[in-house]
Length: 120
Image (cartoon, rainbow, N blue to C red; front, side, top):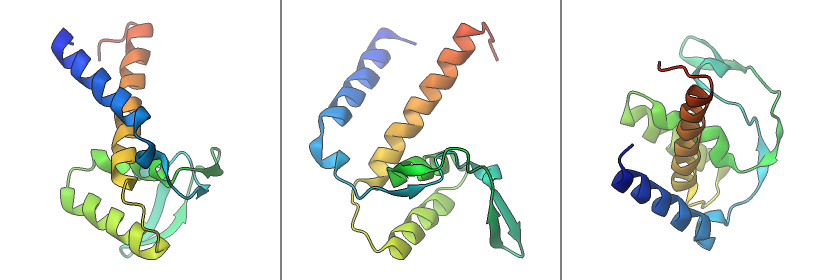
């Protein structure tokens, strides 16, 4: 990674951790390990959720971070809108925190590849 890019990313992460408004959210029960394959569906409806091994009270943005890797902005927007509508909460920073968590997850994955010397 180029030094300028790395410094820019680090600066953005530092600003995020220092932004007190970003971290004002209502903790709720979260799955903690959601991904696209966590959902059982039938006839375009969710019929079940798998993988409850990370169940805890925490930041709902953690459960929504995986959506940011979706191939469609419309799907991502729809999911965030549905979550906000159903929860009735005014968490204006939800998507920003989810983005932060998603970036950290990519960094963790890259570090794992480095540690295991896996170039793929």
